[in-house]
Length: 106
Image (cartoon, rainbow, N blue to C red; front, side):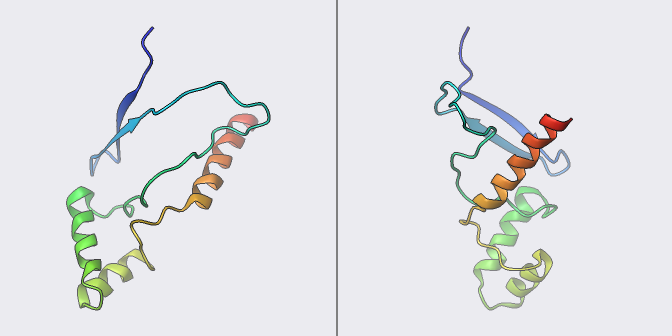
């Protein structure tokens, strides 16, 4: 049987976010480790309901105009600061723990 090394999925069928997931390595489960677990990633996800890829690019372009009216409007819409290169590892781990707990109790 051939190992899966890459797969795709679509998130938010209305906005059609297409993702490609690449499996870099697999191994045996470690004794005492909690699963699922976050091993690494790049960049923060786009804001929810930003209008798909085109809306996201507009959002990023508006933020790049640091002190412009459009940048202020974009941040007001988002509800706070947004740094696309920041990844919220703590929130990812909280979410993964919630998923794991739902399988244990569900």
